[in-house]
Amino acid sequence: MNTLFLVQFACCIIVSMLGLILVLSRFQIRWTNRRYEVSRWLLAFSMFVLAWHYVLQMVCGFRAKGDEIGAVVNVLFYTPVSFIVSYATYNLICYRRGRKKFALLGCVSYALILICFFFGYNDTPRGMHMGEWLYVMLVLFAVTILYSVYTTVIEMRYHRKIIEENTTEDLLPFDRYAYASYGVASIMVLAMVGAICYRPLLYCVGPLMLFSLISFTISFLGYGYNMILRR
Image 1 (cartoon, rainbow, N blue to C red):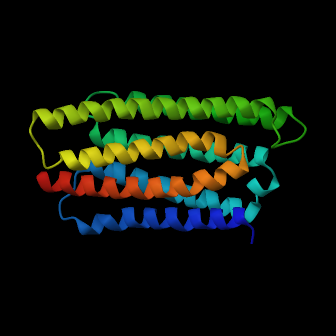
Image 2: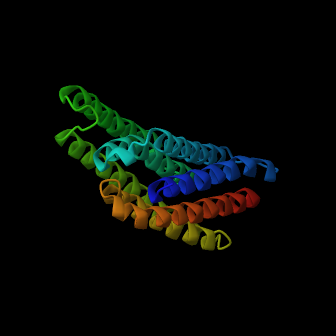
């Protein structure tokens, strides 16, 4: 087994465990909050999609065939997963109108990526080696991440202001931890734009991405538990 396979295997195991933890956490609470439950299931779904992605990578060897093919497959999977994670966070803290717009723009951006993949796959005789179309997909991927991260961070700051004004100091430490963990995860996702194109960088960013996902999931569960207890 080479290093790439071991990294993919470790990622598959860890994200599968995170998804399972998010599912089993439902049985550890007595009262439920509808908005939190929607976000929790979205986050669990994104973890299982990531796990399936790594299974496909190990079985089909997309990344092992070359960085270009690996980048195409990674963009197709990482774009919806990163957006779903951002939407799960945004949905949990957003008390203003904007969730539908957020979801709509995410769907439109991913539809554009799929259109680029369709034209690139059919217009070039090399199949997954799509040339210039790959760069268009990478730009759309980066723009989608920047939009989702920026919008979510703005909403997090607005939510923190509400917490401070309502003097709900018991939630403030969890809000700060969630803000920090989401910020670190967002930086790692942005770094993945380069890592999916350059394998040596992947070996550095990959483990850091896993740690950020673990930290974010723990903060998400802790914030959810305390939010439910306050109600």
